[in-house]
Image (cartoon, rainbow over all chains, first blue to last red):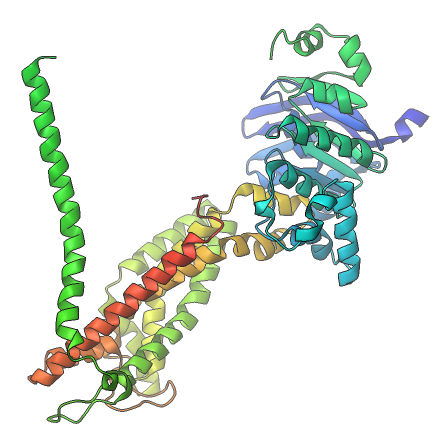
Length: 254
Length: 284
């Protein structure tokens, strides 16, 4: 096995995905590198969110869906892993921030608690550490026991990131995490993603090409369920190999 | 459009608007009429004695219905114990686990159960509880009213569980929580206020039931101890007193009707207030 391959956290080979009779992904193959940020771009309905949701088997909860092909996490097929174990290792942040109707503290503590957590002090430490990593601690430290629903949209999304980080996932999946946020909140999230990537593998789906260019190391361009091109982000944005990629990133369609 | 046609349209509009408005007022008037009538007739006979005294022997005036107030409370409590766990868990199954066939069967059965006349429920509880025990009891009354609560409890639980946004479930699943844990720690707590609201309204609905209690709880002119004796309830007392030949009893029946109605109105208001602070109120 070459050096390059050994750094792959996730290896996807020939992934097909069906919603009932309609096929959403066609033979997608790519490698997600350890502790790097991989972006998935493409027009609406191209399958990039579906692709992301197969990586932690979130699509298993949608009736009538079917995935075939191979997805390996550290060289183990994810379909052979216990799904709750898989999801602890591969966390997810959703497009629409979805804090629980609980306190800020209880939101972040949720993961550690359900996973058997440790002492109260351990959990409190974990909550603080996660909120700091999500760059939210200073804004909420004086109101940890107030409802999370009282936070602003950007704060709620960072809370969701903190909640996902609190289970210490090896991989973090983000599904258009900034699509409902203003530029300042978006900038904060991009900044914290760059920090987190020191110790966590990140896959982010985004509609925003500038965002992909700013934060990611690798970019995959999806079109109509196919992965058209996958390469280093500079290569994709400066010298794409495919005509469709160039048309998309230059705004000629999509 | 001709002027005549436009005039006609305006006329039809005005007539229909007034007709529907009048119907809406008529509906409100029915409720206000009942409230007012009960108030006028009941308030005069309502005194502290009504809440603290036992019924007086036939022929004597005065006395109260303290035993019936306590008896109604006992039987409604018993109904909650019987109806709510079954209804709640059935609703959880229906909303979260049942396949298409299971959903069809549960929905169909609850709809049918909801349509069973209350007197028939009473007969069933009589056969189920009263006959084997060889006596009327608060248990039997509670079983009868509990059975009446089940269908609505199932459906309201289902409805409020389904109103919990998918995003909340996915958030918990994505953190590695198994499905049952997602239910216990996220979905049910988010739906809690709604489910409790449903239970209160359900309880208010059965609080006035008379027929199922006639031959289950029966009645009693004295205090009943525990749950294993014939027990007086407000609705049955209203029935007994209203058909009696004594003027004083008629007055007391009005008072009991007023108290019962106030109880139901209070439960309804409490339910609405609870729902108003539910996190799901915007989600439905």
